[in-house]
Amino acid sequence: MQTIVLATQKGGSGKSTLAISLALAAIRAGHNVRLIETDSQGTLSNWKRRRPYAAPVVEPVYAAREVEQRLQSLDREGVTVAIVDTAGGVSAATNSAIRYADFCLIPTRPSIADIEATAPTLSVVRAWHKPFAYVLNQTPIRGTRLASAEHALSDEAALDIGDILAKPFIVMRNDHQDALSAGLAVCEYAPCGKSAEEIRALWQWIEVRLGNMATAGDEPLIEELVETPAILPAMAALPVIANDSARILRAPARA
Image (tube, rainbow, N blue to C red; front, side, top):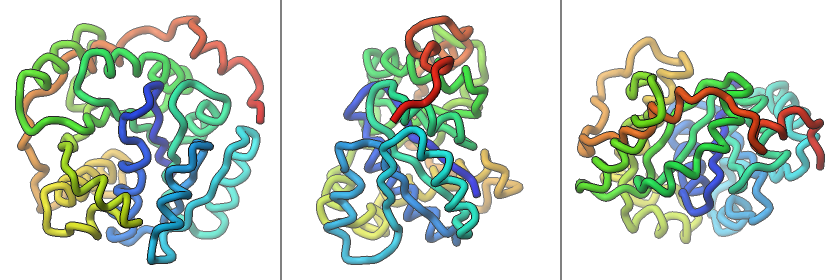
């Protein structure tokens, strides 16, 4: 089983909506998927109550000490992909989820403030030596904001932007929220729309990073958004520092 964790310090980055969308894309790619909710706000659980279909199952796991146990159980049950939605901020449950992740996604909106707010999450991810990528979410189709964000994500890391920035970016469109309200994923709500196309391409990118595919396949990734926030590779190359985010790694997980 492969575990994908969506985590970021800042709320409102679209983690839950993205987790739902990727779960359905993974199901349609042939995976047995489970959604894990570690955020007591309950966005995934509320979505599941509105949902007219049984799959995917949403499992609330709010205690840090239960994360590893539940992931091991899902592996034994034949689940092939677990997608973990975490709460904003740095918590014991988020730390535990990152610890047992195979791949971490850090969603961020394309503003300097949002990108800089990912630093505590990045510190935890790098302290556990986990592969990761940023996902630019809720972006405009084009504009100077993306260029500014690119300039911001390179001032802080000396890594190849292609290695740490997932493609394509996810554009802000109403069908994401409309799908959420209907208990659907965007690929069900508007399967022929641009948003669904972006999510399918993003899942394809993730599968390549996970080693599930030898190549990216026949479908080209969407390149509608051509500017990449330059602060991202810079942040990714920063050394792990002994800040509050890193200290949590030294303490045993608490409920």
